[in-house]
Amino acid sequence: MISTIKEVAERAGVSISTVSKVLKNYSNISEDTRQKVLKAVKELNYIPNTTASNLSSKNKDKVALYICINDMKQAVDEINMLYLQGAFAMANINHLELVTIFNQMVSSMSAQELTSYLAAQGITGIIIYGLNKEDYKILQLIEQQRFNICVIDAPITNDKTSSVMIDHMKGQYDVAKAIIEPEYTRKVLYLAGKRNGYVTDMRIQGIMQLQKELGFELNIQYAEFSEKLAYDLTLRYGSDVDTVVCASDLMAIGALNALIKMNIYRKCCGFDGITLMRYAGKGMLTCKQDFYDISRHAIAEMERLLSGENGRSVILDHQIVSIRYEDINTK
View 1 (cartoon, rainbow, N blue to C red):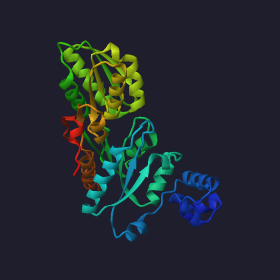
View 2 (cartoon, rainbow, N blue to C red):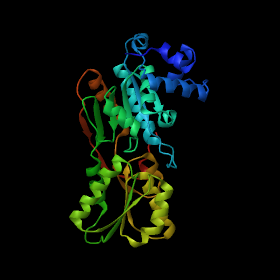
View 3 (cartoon, rainbow, N blue to C red):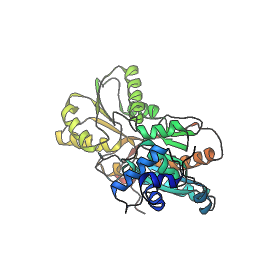
View 4 (cartoon, rainbow, N blue to C red):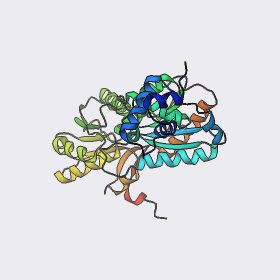
């Protein structure tokens, strides 16, 4: 039997309008009231009827951009800004309505509560940026297949879920191979990202494939996409290696600064191709992704899913480039 919003209100001991406000995440609701309502929603397995909200938005599909913020970063998050710009530019063309949700906004919700919240907003699709292997409630959403979902940088697909990304394994292999000289390289320090990251696993596979081919010793350390951790780890291990390969540009900047601090030269490369690399002081090789274009492709893929087509894996191109200060566009 399908529960109604009236039954939820009665179970929680509040008004129907209060239930509606909780499900729409209004800020002027006390935490005690919010928990009572969400508890009632869970107990009654209530799923809001979104027909009215869909009609009121002139039949536009409403897509949520779910962005996971990495608290370890020390720089302005250029990547997420490019993701947002690409998504909104493409959504305007395709007449999609977008809402942005950051992981901290729903961190206290269970998977069921998050489902109810998204349904109450009239969400029909979700594009997920920065998913990790421990984001269990998002993984449950994907498994349930209630929403059309497009994940960025995670190799997950099903009938209602598509994946959009570059080939991270090949990208890491390509950029590392471009700076490693087999005849002079004995040992490589590899600064990986987050231990629970899909991207981290794929990039580690790339450097390990190159190690297998060239036979160098590989020291893998997890720097969590943090400039400071990369700096500290390079201070600790940098003098004992020939080359430092970093799984992000931000970590490469930290590693480079540590090498400068130690007054030693080691070849170093990054990954991503962010603008900040141009201010590192020296030219550095990196695997460049077009984050704006990746997000545009995610919106296009969401259009496919919303039209009833099945999920699939979409692999986009990457480039191996050297980024220097003089590459900054001053126009």
